[in-house]
Image 1 (cartoon, one colour):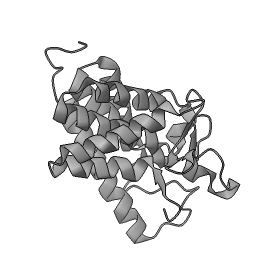
Image 2: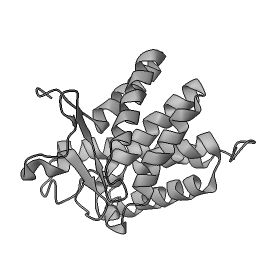
Image 3: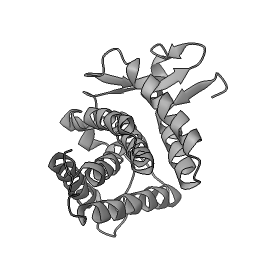
Length: 210
């Protein structure tokens, strides 16, 4: 932002783009940012603060009307529940690209935040990226808990698809979506479902759990 704030979602997106472009050192720097953000969390068993500033550090104070932009509460439904999943997805990609175990450990931490969030998260379409993180962690580790969560997320996508095949955003955030809004959400969710199909079709790696 203009205030020099950086947040999880675009950092993860940028990190994955850097990996696609072969810019491993730059992607590692995004990973280091994710590592720093995680290390500063004061109460990650309850909430995930998602924004950091070089001047102020972890942002824990913000205007109340902007709360959802700065923190993800485990116990509330209308949150940016995608934060844990997209962070895990990027970090799992970073591990798969480099073989460096610290990124796998960090991916597990962010994904565990997502997977231990209260059941209310499934009321929100913003939980969509949790399957991305768990699916890639299944690819990386072969661990059944990640496969089971990816399968649960696949069922969640199917359960929320409307009769004509499209998906819509959470009504709390967008009570009257336009056709353009629905195209945007549906295109994203088709990508997530395609990823889940490919992840779940894979056998567990031979060294699963090591």
